[in-house]
Length: 442
Image (cartoon, helix red, strand yellow):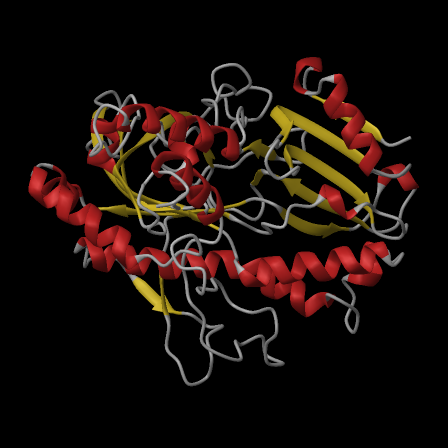
């Protein structure tokens, strides 16, 4: 039977442990991190690290998420530029509208296909043009603020104080490349291939596809950040050429201060449980710190993110722990999107019986309208995205498990949303909600 470990028994209850063991083989292992769970929405495992034998066949592809190599990229922006937008209510509103209009999304336009394709030239360049944007319900981009304690003069100690910092943050995945890689890998594993065989040159998906999907999400986020910076008038963002773009194109991607990778897979030299041979580490819904620049973890959408810095204020932190150097990323999902949209539609329908012009039944709609925007399909109602309706709980691990995760010498910095564009409610769910609120004949 596959072995499942946890830093503490509470991280892996009986139901999760059984789900993990059902998906693993005798030589596989799994480490459940704090906030480990299986999503009630997608069925994907979160905050778990898998050590998978590369030589054995019959691996269940359901342990993998289709959102391969997704993550977060961030740029530090000048305080004066950010506050020039945030200090003025009219400028804030204009910035929100411009930002939501600038970012393509599969949930605002069903004909929009996000991300690069998996197919490429022999030197890993795109074969044709592609659209950057939001590829999943959890995507976002915008300005976040935080209070960071640091010294105004890095050569002097003892004079640290709180500084207000601002970042342009993007959370998104690899789009089409990630979806096709997942489809091909799942197909090969179901045919009885081992991971070594499926990821070898000449097979499907193959080594080149793994390289492509490994950079797709980062390239997508880099282009989204450029689009967001232009929409917000942040002209000081550094950019460089996208080396994977088609030969007749010249895409630019943002130079990021932080880049965090999740749902990654990497080959390691030996597998202790099988007595040698190849193995693969898969970071399901958690931060692969070896492949990342910095450490960021997500809370719910209204709270934002948690960023870690060292004692001097640098974001280049090194993490070493017994859980393959991984850090939790996903906060725990507590409600399915469908349930939340249905509940919001019921509340809005009740409001419509009293006021036909009512636009939202959210208890915190004024605060949300000042900070969030989204560009969804037009069905007559515009219900808030599920991430604002309570789909995720707040993160809870930083105050309890920092020492065990190798973060005890780091400072946790809360990145709070200021001007943020989110993925809209999925069209099918929004259409059903509109019919419920407005009546089937409208």
